[in-house]
Length: 187
Image (tube, rainbow, N blue to C red):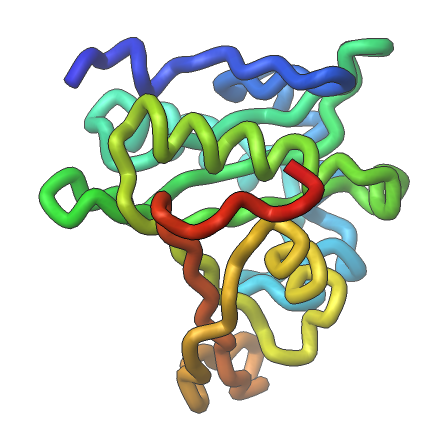
């Protein structure tokens, strides 16, 4: 598989998904240090620039090893970084990966998750040859559950007491979408 497949630029009507750069670190820190954005993540909010730099560096290393695809979501109109989308836990042999996403608070409710998500899902199915894409979310994260359902995912299970963050134990809802599933109506 070509290394270029893990460094794509994917364009939609309003968005450009592209590999993250060190110069994105300040914007990433602003987004992922917000407790509201990080409420349902399995990590605490970021606390400093080193968190953002470490994120960019570790994900670029992971992309070089062809283990994940982590892309910044930029508005075409302004070039502003709105957040990130990921295909991670990539298994070439099983032809599966997990999807994850996070947007800055000011970008919520504008349809960017659906637009960027469907583009990345299609890239995963059509370019990476994935058969299955999974998502794992906190069952209380109703906005993400709604977004996943709109993207054509089905809830497949509940993983009880899956995470513990700062002493808080939480479950995970498991969602899946197959390449053979009917595309969502909005696609």
